[in-house]
Length: 77
Image 1 (cartoon, rainbow, N blue to C red):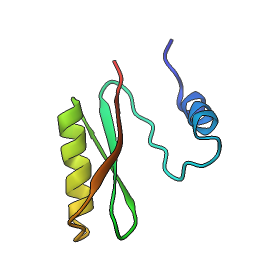
Image 2: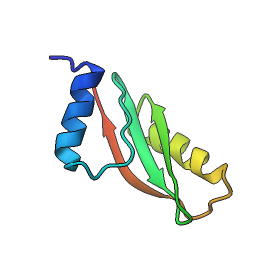
Image 3: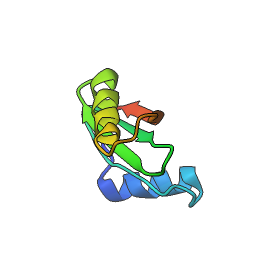
C-alpha cells in the first residue's frame, strides 16, 4: 500500500513522539538527513543510498560546515 504524504507525516510524528524537527517525505528512491556541528539539518535525495548521502553532505558542506554527519537515511521501492 502506497502512503500518501499526510499518512507519512502522521507516521513520522508517531515514531518521533513529537520530538522530530525535520521530516522529509519522498518515494521511489532514497533520502538522507545529515547534521552540522554548528547546527542545521540538510537533506539529500537520490536513486540509491550513496547518492542521497552524497547530496545531503554536499548541501551541508555548502554552508561551510566541515564536520557534517549522517543522522538517518532510508530507501523506498
